[in-house]
Amino acid sequence: MDLPDDCLFFIFHRLDSSSDRESFGLTCHRCLRIQNLSRRSLHFECSFRQLDKPSSSHSNITINSSHVHRLLTRFQHLRSLTLSGCTHLPDSSLSHLASYGSKLHTLHLDCCFGITDHGLSVVATSCPSLQVISLYRCQITDSGLESLSNSCSTLKDVNLLYCHAISDSGLRALSQRCRQLQAVRISNCKGATGIGFQGCSSTLAYVEAESCKLAPEGISGIVSGGGIEYLNLSGLIWRSGGTGLGTIGRGFALRLRILNLRMCRTVGDESIVAIAEGCPLLEEWNLALCHEVRIVGWSSIGTNCQKLEKLHVNRCRNLCDRGLEALRNGCKQLSVLYMNGCVKITSTALEIFKCYRGDVTVEVEEKMCIGPSWSLCV
Image (cartoon, rainbow, N blue to C red; front, top):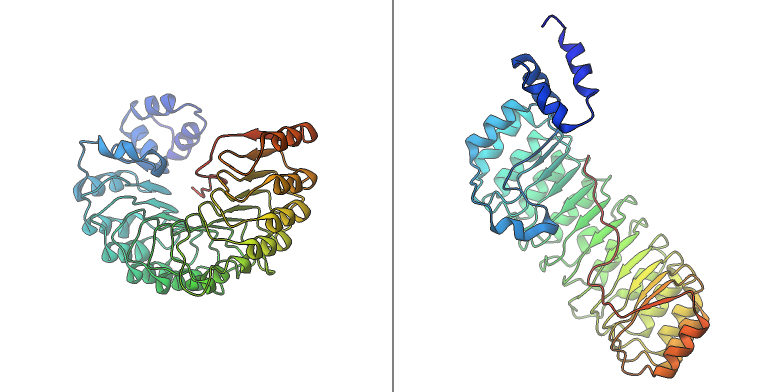
């Protein structure tokens, strides 16, 4: 074949289907090399997506350091690499990124239990262009986050779900040094109070902090950048000094569109009023199992939440007929009301609501998760 490599690259990239590209690589050694150098994403067979956790339990493949080295040598221009589910992968396997990781933008290491702070420091120095990293259930600490934030200032999306050893120190390093940060997940990181977010960039729009022990100052820190659009504080574990949820509505969350307070059982009217008045763009609000929200809170939601489209009130013990009437007369954009198990709501009040608000669908389903499926896979 006399065609120059530039022409072969052009031909390869004009192929639409994956089967055609595979066939191209089988033509000859040169075409295989073109195919390998053109690959931008690599998923190991044992890899799994976080939302498909059951798949991690039935993989019999063990990926070791030599596998990683051979594949990184073959595919030298990767932008996305997923090693999730490679539970026995050691830190040493990541050393090969020093030669081939400079163009990597996305790295998934979910449930890589052998990866520690040392491995993360290798990632940091080898992948300066990294924008997305997922470390779900990894054995990393604040030291690893310090290394990552020192070298990868362009980080935009960081997943730290169930990373029990991290604290506000590591979060502070991320929020202060990675000023393009857009999304952070710290659910079930019970060592973090949220104070590490204080002074975060205005680009931070998405925060998941489910089942965290946040301090009032920590909640204030999360919204301090002014750019928050999605906030999940469901199952918040109270610390002494109050919940601090009212700070959400005190001027820093004007862009907030989706708020999940499910199972915040002791959140009261004062906080609800502050949020309803201070978050004018709120479109979806989950208040399921928020038992201390009473008529004052429901009335404030009806009066102030004029952009609200979805409201979750499942099993709210103190939502009564008057509260439902306040929601009926207000919330003009409401389209879905998730409601079941509200023992103080009479069947008559519910029928009147349906009669006057035919534009609202009343769903008995209880949603455990709400909001966008946020991903910055580049």
